[in-house]
Image (cartoon, rainbow, N blue to C red; front, side, top):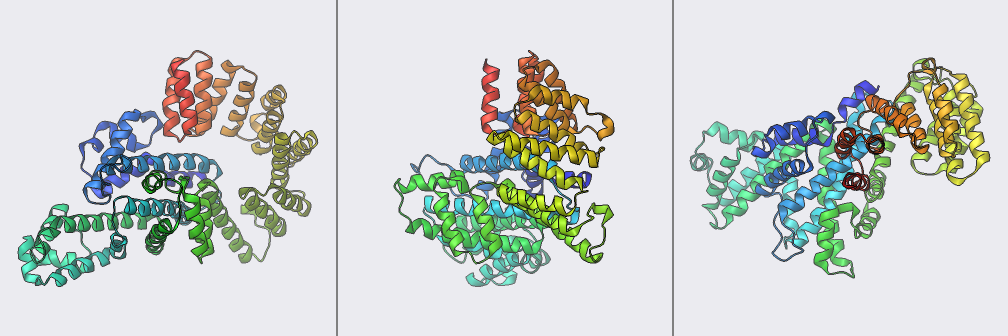
Length: 546
C-alpha cells in the first residue's frame, strides 16, 4: 500500500503552502521563488533557515493582521503576537516532519479512504496543544473567555447566521445594509443565508455599517471579530477535506471546551513562578510546557470520553506512538472485517492463515507501541506456537527478544532472538526483513564485523535490498570507523527512503569524516527539512564550525 499512502503524507512546507494558497495570503514573502521551493516539499529544493523563517513569519503576520492573535500588553515577557505565533507554527512544522519521517516506513495497511482517521489523530493532539496555548494567551493579553464564542459560529452556514444576527441586533434593515456595504442584494443574501465569504475589504465595510448603529469605537473590534470568524471557518473548511465535517465539528467543540477549562484551571492552580511567566511559557510551548502536566491531568479527570483521554495522555509526551497506534487500530479493523466475511477461512491476500494466531500477533504489536515489552513477548510467542509456519511471528519474536537482550547485555536472549530471525528467514528466504534484522541484532550486541559479514552475504534473491538493509550495513561500517565504505551504503539507503532524518544525519557526519565537504553541506541542509532533532542539527552545526 506504500505507493498509495505516501502521497498523503506531505512535508510541513507542502502543508503550509496549501494553507497559504487556500486562505489567499498575498504577502510577497510567500509568493517568491524561494517560497515556492519550500512549498514544493522536494528535498533538492531546500531553502535557508533565514528564508524559511521569513516565510513562516509572513503567515504569522497574516494571521495576526486579521485578528487571530492579539498583542500582549507591553512588558509581559517581551512577547509580541507575530513572532510568538511564528514560533508556534515552526514548532508544529518541525514536529510534523519528525512524525512523518517516523510514520512513512511504518505505515500499516491503511487504504486511502481510511487515511482521514490517521490525519484526525494528529489534529486532535494539535488541538489539545492549541487549547493550552489559547487559554494562556487569553490570560496574558487580559481578555475574557467570551473571545471563544466565535467558535460557535465557524461552520460555513453558521457564519452567515452570525452576521445576520449582528445586523438584526443593531437594527439595520436588509435594504439599508445592502446600501451601506455598496453591493447588490444577491451578494448580501449569499453572505447571510448561504455562508458565502465576503472579502476582507467587504468585512471592513460591514463592520462600518454595523458600527454606525452602535458606538463608533466598536468598528475596530467588529472588523477584528469578523475577519477572525471567517478565517477560522476557512481553516475549518480546509480541514473538512481531510478529516470530514463531523470530525471538525467535534474537534472545534473540544477546542472551546478545553480552552475554557484550562483558563479556569490556571486560575485555581497555585504556581511557584510569577503568573506572567507561566502564561508565556504555556503560550510558547503548549503541551510540552513544564506547567502542562498539571493542566492535562485536570483535563483527563474531567473528560468522560475514553478516546479523548488517550489523546490527552499522549499530548504531553509522544505523539508518534499515539498516531501509529491509531494506524494499527485501522489495520486491525480491516482484518477483522475480512475475517468475518470469510468466516475465518484462509485469507491468502492478507497472509493470514490462522486468525487466532494473528489475534495474538496484533495484540503484541499494540503492546509494543505502549512499551509493554514483556507482555508483547508473551503474545507473539503464543502466536508462533499457534502458527509455527508463519515467518512474521518468528521475525517479530526474534526482533523483540534480540533488541531487549542487546540493550540489557543478555547474550542468551540475543541468541534466542537471532535463532528466531534465522527461522523466519528459512521459512521465507525471499523476505529481506529477517535477513536485515539479523544484521541489526549483531550490530546492537557489539558484533560489528560479524554484522558486516552477514549483511554482505545477503543476496538480491533474498528479496529486494531495501533502505533498511543499506542503513544497517552503513551503520555497521560506521561503528568500525570505515566511513569511506559507510557513506555509499547510507546513500543507497537514502535513494530508497530520501527523508529519513537519522540516515541523513549519519550521511552528513560520514561525509565530514571522509573530507567530502560538498556532501556534508548538502546532507546538513537536508537534515532540518526532514525533521532531524534540534540536538542533531546543533551537532551538525558544531561539525561545520570545526
